[in-house]
Amino acid sequence: MDLYDLKTEFDKSGIMMCFNGPFSHSIIEETGKAMRNHLEAEHIAQVAVLDVFAVYIELAQNVRNYLTVRKITPPEAMSSIIAIAKAGDQYAVSSGNVVLKNDTQVFCSRIAEVNALTPEELKKQYRQQLRKEVPIGSLGAGLGLLEIAKRATDKIACSIRDIDPIYDFFTLTVLI
Image (cartoon, rainbow, N blue to C red):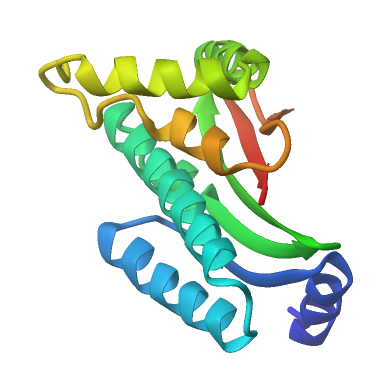
């Protein structure tokens, strides 16, 4: 392994921070603190720091929750990754993890639905979702993707890469 080559590739791609491995609550919390401190040290506007941090937390929790609910265990879970990169005047927060093939189209369809909403429709759907009861056994209130879309400066991007007959690698990227 040549870390210099990896660092050079990160620098070319604008990657400021990257974590690869299994996501636990403590890993999400600690890498989130490190990322927030790094952005603040770069004298980035506080609003941007908060938006990047919020999207990072949502994406990392989505990965962790998905792997927990679907009971996907190592070595598949080791394929989880999250990266924060400088992309021109914006920041790109990307997450990637293995997903069951049956789930990829559902995810992409939901992202397309959210991307099609106007800002007013997004706010309305967010408020409606807040009022709904959280289903028993649910890991959240279903607000994560809506929260991400509210903070994004562009449409949420997703991609799917075929891994094997059971799994795909699913990537989400949000520009802020």
